[in-house]
Length: 105
Length: 295
Image 1 (spheres, rainbow over the protein chains, first blue to last red):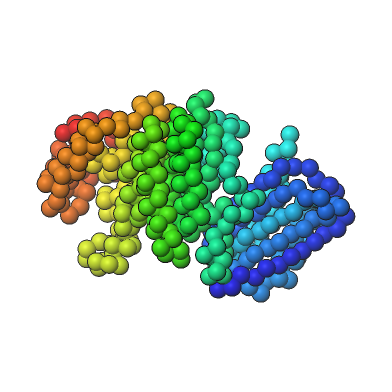
Image 2: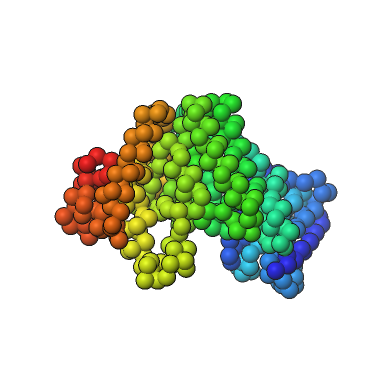
């Protein structure tokens, strides 16, 4: 098994304050998502390490949708994936960004 | 609403057990202290290597905690994972918290890490005993989906006290391992009733290995932890010798038994099949005078 590493960057998001948050577990069909604040001039950087190779185009689409939903900038998202479906990935990303924002009160 | 301990992740268990906002994590996910062995094998790594460690308070008392995440590789112990648990215990020797709480959920050694994992587990055992020798009670909670098996089953029994739910399982070789090694005639790992009669929480309670049995909720585990902290640790030669006597009596009395039911009958349960259906309070009341520790 080889891990596939995928990187995405979305520019001109809304700078989003928060505290480092982790959600999910790296188990079969699941993933863990770590969200950290990062000075990226409003960009959102995403790095995915996945055990399921060859799904880069789908990841791209899921991440594009995520950025369209939240428009969150100045954050770095790191994902460890063990074959989660796109729907699960979207839900985890939403959970992660809510958790990141929610902790900052 | 009561929250299921069984269904919760390691992080949710910590959040639910400790006083609100009291948890401070050591080596959090953002530090990315991950397994070098899994990386070499090109296998996925978890940011926390499957164990969450830190300090916090429970009912106002300062405690250290380590919680294994069963969802990541069955909670298996690798080199980093084990070192994190050892670090918590060694720090307890230095700082003397009111207790160290180990939320164990593990199949044992992470086979991908082989000797490094085995050494890690033996270091955990030594560190548990060091903490107890320094006067810090080590309290183990077992109630997750993956149970507590392998070397960590031994480590659990080195602790001051074990709290289990009926759903929890504690053993050395897990059911599938026994079946693989000895054949399905010896042990059918798919027979769930048999599995729970031999490694489940109620059986471990009746054998005197788990000190407290609780219903499956984080709140119940929390109350039991508070009670265990209050009791402290009986770290004496007398207590150790008594435990040894209990264990040799057990071989004498139950060595021929093929099933938990046979043991329960010898302990005075005239209808052992009724045990599985009892709720927690009913079971604990009925077990008075009918467990290996007090009969």
